[in-house]
Image (cartoon, rainbow, N blue to C red):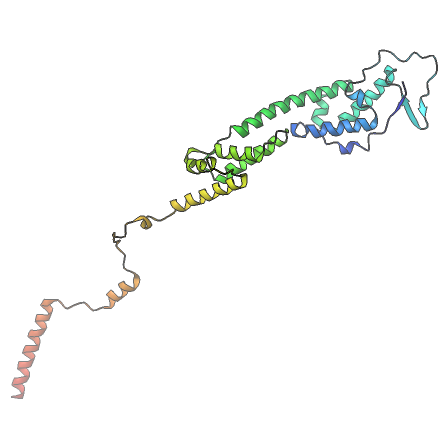
Length: 277
């Protein structure tokens, strides 16, 4: 088998995202890491396609160990060369893990076992996450006590989460879930949109729901007097101007005081007549 020379992976490690326990970042981590090992020339060792030779090569002729300034490895024939490459790949892989994960997998070796262990764990978590996201999308229910914008954002966010696990729903499926999950108090507008003879697009459905919410708020915010019959006469309180005019207007003289004044004037007239006579 021809020997292989190894490229230095240090310059490529920065292109691999750090795996930190979040299953969302696992697909990109795995893709970039496999690309790195393919460039270096050890992808078959990392993925387990090239098993470790039982013993070192037994050829009688002496094989060259270097080619120019590069070291040559006979991983298909030499167990020691395979171990050397495996240790180098294992150290490279651990540099792409978070501190917690690097400590957790500190004793896991060789590199093909380490890589398979991590992939199995995250693929299992990915399946559980996929099922959880599907339930969150298809079983969501609308809360009528919250604004309709909250319900719309919830459906859109769960649909975006499904894209992260490659289960992106179509716009029409998002529209159907948006309408089917509405509360019963929204039944009139829901039935109007669901049983429409024309296909309702997602943006049109969102606009109709927002307009329906506005119309409901306007109807509830009307003051009671707008619903009263025209024949009902409501009592009005006098304004400040009317009260002021009433205060300035002189009050009529009581009847008793008016009679006393008339008697006084009569006596005064009699006295004046006698004086002049």
